Length: 168
Image 1 (cartoon, rainbow, N blue to C red):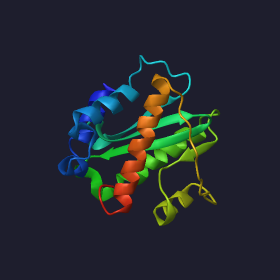
Image 2 (cartoon, rainbow, N blue to C red):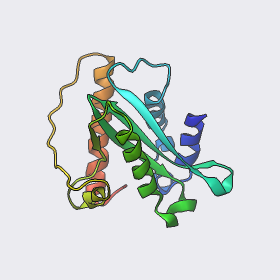
Image 3 (cartoon, rainbow, N blue to C red):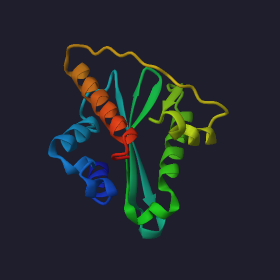
Image 4 (tube, rainbow, N blue to C red):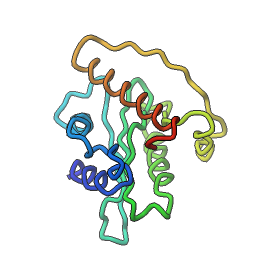
């Protein structure tokens, strides 16, 4: 299944060795797997998964990008790449697949590739300009709001760690 592919790739990344991969922590694994649960109602936030496959190894999964779409914007929130394919820059392939998916979806008008400042220069591969956005968010006092708030806190923590030279 797709969830099994995410777990397998997540356990073969440098993030796993450093303890920051999805499967490194049971709580984090439960959180991300619940986001991708196809049985959950998705009227407000729609989970999307982009899997990368290696055609030389019988279509074995070698990477993933977990995305959420909300209000016309696609948010790329978590990527995992198998170390065996790192020399071919699979991250650009994953991001390209996300951009291609978003361009083909008439309900999406923006993409948040989760990069700021000099880290975002690569985005010019798909656009003639980039916009730096400041966001103020409010979360409803219900299950969906708590999920969205938890996701935002995790994203902020990961960005802070990355900016401080920690996990990427």
